[in-house]
Image 1 (cartoon, rainbow, N blue to C red):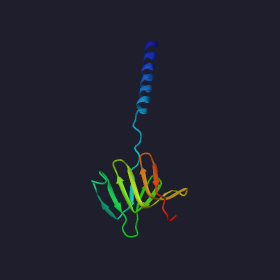
Image 2: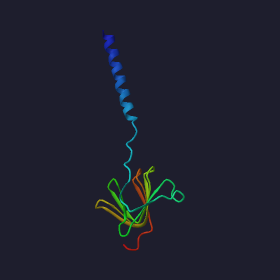
Image 3: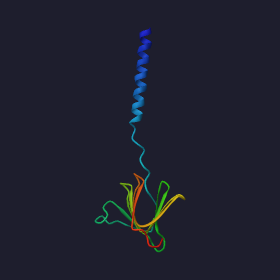
Image 4: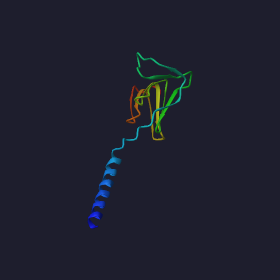
Length: 125
């Protein structure tokens, strides 16, 4: 009887440890997709931007995209949906809450890493 109890305890312990390690092997949660909030003209240019969708401003209305608290407005947005990346051109303005505001002529944003690389500061600021 004592041998049975020890055997059962050992099995339960191994089972619990196995569940612990199996749970730890679950894939990390995928990053949310970049969302186009407002766009006007939609084009596709597989030669220049393979796999991308291009959004162009129409009139005074800029293209706007959003990702986990970051909003970006621009004249042209090249969205790589499968990579979760976007390149923004022309009069780009990035805002994260009330703390971060930046303007530029070019921003490359990676939605998986949640990083933005900006170049060519706008002369209007």
